[in-house]
Length: 185
Image (cartoon, rainbow, N blue to C red):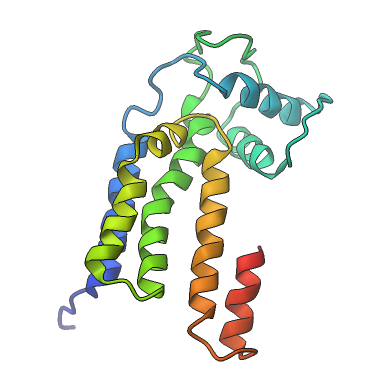
């Protein structure tokens, strides 16, 4: 078969994802100590894995996703998460704990690129918008730690994309209904 080049927007989105993976996963296990709010979310993960009761005023979805990823990665709730700066032993699969937020952070730039394209921005403007999420230091740091912020950001960006895409279909058509329902998930 003949070589067919990838459409430019798709190639840019994949490149943004690749850069997101590179910036989020490089040295992900550093520092090998409890940082910032990992102190709290680590305890929540332990509670879900061990079945120990705890009270938290926030919705559980982000913490449940973190616990499921940690459990799937072999984490056994053995880390105490007792203080910021507490060393995390090498037996604790830190990649399993920090991997899901890193993946969610890596998905954010291409999702914002697709959203910007869906609302009619040029490729250059869409690239600039997504570069903001790719290179923003606070977003980068939050997506490299055991936190629920990347879950919230990814869900918000997905909602915006679904709403933008639904606007390109006639009201009550199949496409409009599907994309509108997607914005509520």
